[in-house]
Image (cartoon, rainbow, N blue to C red):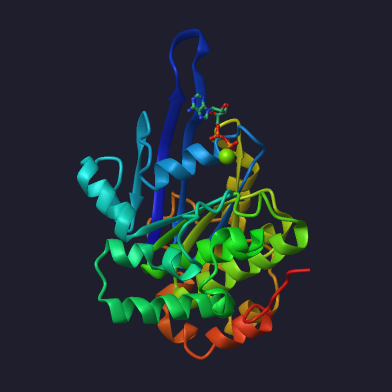
Length: 293
Ligand code: ADP
Ligand code: MG
C-alpha cells in the first residue's frame, strides 16, 4: 500500500516582491513500512514539506494523501484527528515536556486517545524498553542526555501506534556517534512497529540505511533521482529478512508516481516481521545500549 502520495505540491510564503517559493511542484510516494530519507540543504523546503505531509500546514496547490486519505481536502477537525491518531512528529529539539518524567512524556499520546491506564502503562514500559531507557523512566528530560531525550521522543512518537512517523532533522543537535545510534534505532523501530517514516536529515548514517532517498533542491525533487527511481524499481519488492537485519543497503529510491499499482512493500507481509524483530534490535546493538560517556 502507498502510505504517502504527494502530487504537485506548491507552497509559497509571503506575497509580492518578498514571496519565497518553498515548494515548487513536489511529487513522490512512499510505500507502507518504508523508511525514506529526505535530504537537501538548509532552505530547500524539507520542513515545509514535512509540515504539509503531516497536516500542520496546507499547500497552495497540489494534493497529499496519507493512508489513502486526502489530507489537503480535509476539514481542520478531521486533519486534527489524523495528526492525533495516525501521524507522529519527531523534532530536532526533542519537544519533551520538561516537568514530566520520561515515562509520562511517552504516555502523552495514549492519554490523548484515552487508552485505559493499565494498557497505557504496559505500552509505555514496552516503548521505554525498545529505546533502551527502562532504567530512566522516572527521570525528567533535563536529567537525560540529548541522545536519551531523543530516544524518549521516539518512544513517545510511537506509543500511540501511528501509521506515519515524520522526523525533522532528529539528530541535528546530537554528536555524530549519538546521531548514528538514533538513526539505527529509527531504522529498527520502523521495522518492528511496521510504521512508515519520512526523515529530513543531512546525516550520512541515515542515508546509508534508509530504503530510499529523496533529495530536495530549491523546492523541487532533484531530477537525477527520478531517473534512478525507474532503474531501481525492482528493489521495491521485499528483501530477505536477513539482508535487512544485518547489512545496510544502498538506498533504493521511492516508487515513481507513474506506476499504476502500488509497489509491494515490506510491511505488507506481517510474517516477514515475526521472529526478526528482536534479532534486528539486537543485531544493531540497540536494546539496552547506553552511549553516555
Ligand atoms: P529546510 O527545512 O529545508 O531548511 P524550509 O522548509 O524551512 O527548508 O524553508 C524553505 C524556504 O521557505 C526557505 O527559503 C525559508 O526561508 C522559507 N520559509 C520557511 N518558513 C517560512 C515562513 N514561515 N515564512 C517565510 N518564509 C519561510
Ligand atoms: Mg528545516
